[in-house]
Amino acid sequence: MSKKFYSGDFEKQPQEYPGIQSKMSPVPDTGEETYQGSNKLTGKKALITGGDSGIGRAAAIAYAKEGADVAINYHPEEESDAQDVKAAIEKIGQKIVLLPGDLREATFAQEMVKEAASQLGGLDVLVLNAGIQQYQYDIQKLDSKQLRDTFEVNVFSQVHAIQEALNYLKEGSSIILTSSIQGVKPSAHLVDYAMTKSCNISLTKSLAAQLGSHGIRVNAVAPGPIWTPLQISGGQPQESIPKFGQNQPLQRAGQPAELASAYVLLASDESSYTTGQVYGVTGGAPIN
Image 1 (cartoon, rainbow, N blue to C red):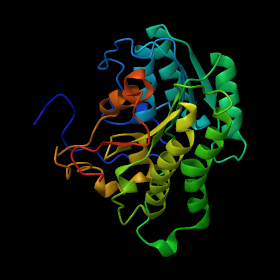
Image 2 (cartoon, rainbow, N blue to C red):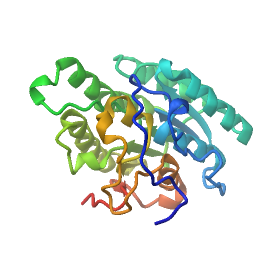
Image 3 (spheres, helix red, strand yellow):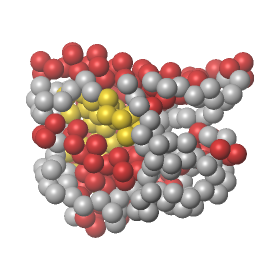
Image 4 (spheres, one colour):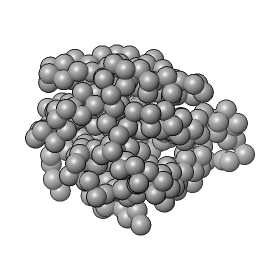
């Protein structure tokens, strides 16, 4: 087994949602030191939701290292992580715009896109990555607020953001959704989350067909078990944390940095003939 990424047991470490990456042990690898850019996104302008930590942060860091200016959205309680991303991207030498806000609020997604396009001077790439995941083994205890919150963030805000972004995205632009292996292989304790991830896949495929004539590509990344704040802040029961991800063929959880190249590829002109696809990064579990 490769020793490049952490493969041991994790400590139990409960945090309140949405969780702070800097307080995790081990801290997830989001590419600040490990990702190497090669000018694949020079001059592009990207908005990434959930960009303060985890997968979204890894995408933001990689985009900056590839020459893009970025705007990141995040929950206001995650400001400390967002400031870390800001410092990292400014060190790289790219522009970064911080857009705190709650995607559960009906009009925020549109306002976020408008502000990102205004401050970046346009928009070429929209990465819809923010998500809520809260485990619940008993559907009779799945309360309406959790159900509503999960769909508001994971599905409805994506639609609202895309509706606004189409006022700015031009031919050659890219929309990337973060789905999940849960969208095709749902777990018993993630009923509502898995439903939304299936929605992400459906949205990817239908929008790819709708926007193809405009030259706008729509794809999704479907991660498997990735070590992010999502998992320790209610996404998994604490008793599952020590062995998290070890049931995959690669026998470990993935690190956010290991998904960065997928988001770069789908944002770049190298995937100019790729749309309507779901790109699995799962540690070996099939998504088809």
